[in-house]
Length: 255
Image (cartoon, rainbow, N blue to C red; front, side, top):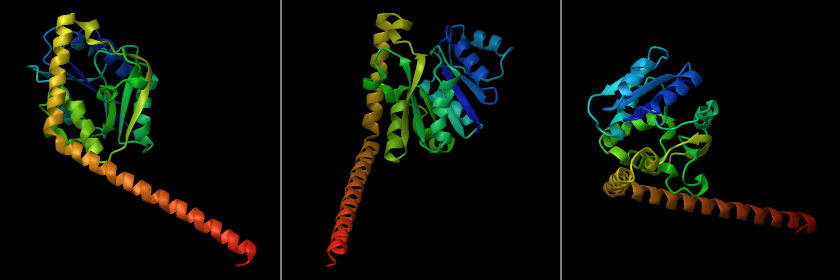
């Protein structure tokens, strides 16, 4: 089953070439879509030169509209059923990273797969932000209904997608992408700019949570329902075990 790999980039002239090359080399049969969200550095020239050697679709957005706008644009242009997002600033990409993300979908073990780079500031096992990862795979049919909802929420996009999938009872899997490195903002820019970006992104995420409390409510209701179902199932199993034991006793003593 082929996939469409979407790489959204904004002023990533230093890393975008290696990411695109890795996606093309390791996935020659996949559709590669690069969405340039109004970069004003040398990203466009890097991609135009890269297009002379590698086959990918380059989508240029003239002005910066935000991560969510770029993601939606990529999804709308994608022609395959499976969508795989890859950040434009990661490094040390390996062939197995793609299959780590895709295999649970292909084997019907998950509806969305979130991949966490192993080389990050916070250990994967205790990282409270791992659900906000940019490496994720999902089915186009599942995300298409919410494209208008996420188009303009910028860095709240991953939060909304996660809430929506949870509220719908979708299966979400987490995988560790061994060796993949994702830089921190403080490695990419000045401390002042990095702090400003963190604050702005935090506001957008918080706003997304506030504006979509109904999804949180649905998720809680679903968890309660699942808990009740699990409790009933456990009671039924226990009751069957008791009945079986009683029946064995009756048979043994000929009651």
